Amino acid sequence: MERPVTKEIKCYARCVLTGKHASLAGITLLVAALNLLLSYLALQAAPYDSGAISIILYFGCSILVNMIYYILLAGLYDIYLDIVNNRSYTWKNLFYAFTEHPEPVAIYSLIQYALYYVFTQVVVWWLAVVINWIFYGEAKNLIISTAVLLIAVILFLYIQISFAMVLFVHADDPDKSFTEMIMEGWQLMGGMRPRYFTMMLSFIGMYLLGVLSLGIGFLFINPYVFATKGYFYKTIESGKSE
Image (cartoon, rainbow, N blue to C red; front, side, top):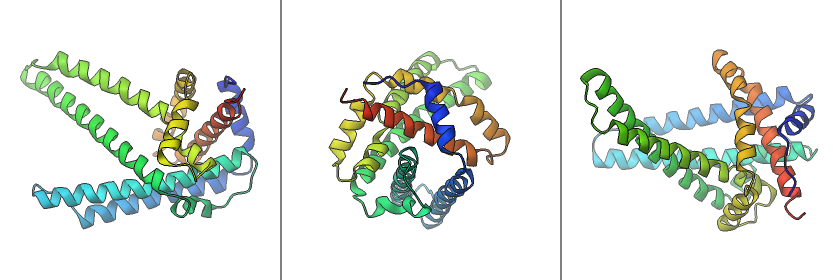
């Protein structure tokens, strides 16, 4: 399999984005706006409360919003796959996955929701332990919670990197089942995890600039990142048979 070179991949991504920045910034803004709107409506429909029914409704709405977001995200991956393959695209591609076998993406969104929820709970637990240590001098469980957090971070990153190409696999062939989509995505990343990790680390400076620009910079940073991911996928997918 061909080994992607970060510098070359990012160079290709910059070239292919020439003349497309405005339209892709608009699409990025549209995805963010739809996600915020859906999240707001979900919170209004089922605000978090201590009651059992309220909790069930809250998580049900959260899962539904997350599912819709991932189906939109699948459309975004389809757009960037078209871009790196020099195919035409429109903002309507964003909604293609709603009609092209959304079931695998929906199942994948459930797994991602569970992973993020568990990871968040570990982080919250660790922060509570640290706060108790700082303000009350209670060092109980500090070492254990820190060790658990480090393990959780490593596992979380490993899983996310291993499945990084899954939505590109779906965009490339929506007819694949959930199992086929997951397995192909996992196999594509075999031996490529360190390269993908270092490639994504190279964007840290740009993400910091995005934060300093109050999020406005992400309208142009995200297309660059997604195009880079698209070329990464194209490189490893085209070389898998070699």
